[in-house]
Amino acid sequence: MAMRIDILCVGRLKEAYWRDASQEYLKRLSRYARVEVTEVNDHPAAERLSAAQARQVMDAEGERLLARLKPNVHAIALDGRGKVMDSVTFSTFLTNLELEGRDAAFIIGGSLGLSAQVLAACPDRLSLGAMTWPHQIARILLLEQIYRGYRIARNEPYHK
Image (tube, rainbow, N blue to C red; front, side, top):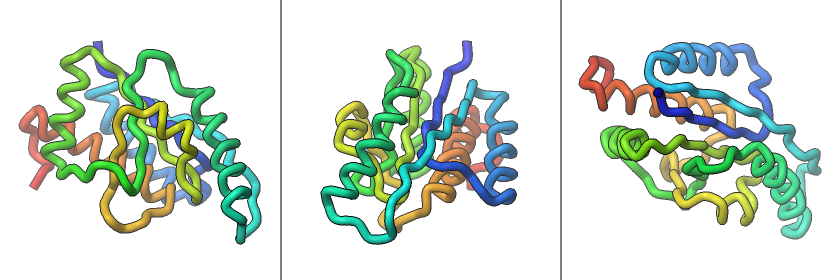
């Protein structure tokens, strides 16, 4: 049985080009795993927020994410303070989860990031590098790296 990978995201892909890219990678990934993207609504917020207001927004979004997190999955938070992996290491990480019979859930926060509750629910944190990425781009980068990871693990051409 193929590994199940859930990608839980705050916000929607509003532009058609992001939706097209997402659908393309989901189609490619269907050969390797059961990948499902779940979007939760972002919390309305002013442009400038106090620290307390920002926490409230992240907490509200976090509750929505955690409500969609399936039991017994290995949760991985996308977080700028997380572990940076090259593509080969990430491929090994996915392969090890699959060999252990684990399903995975990658969690992408909104523009303010992930709440402390979400981070606490995730045994692993993954960084997409030192730069800050909008959550739309982070989703596409993650899908691409999952696809690349499967190609690497199977010694199929793609990775250079």
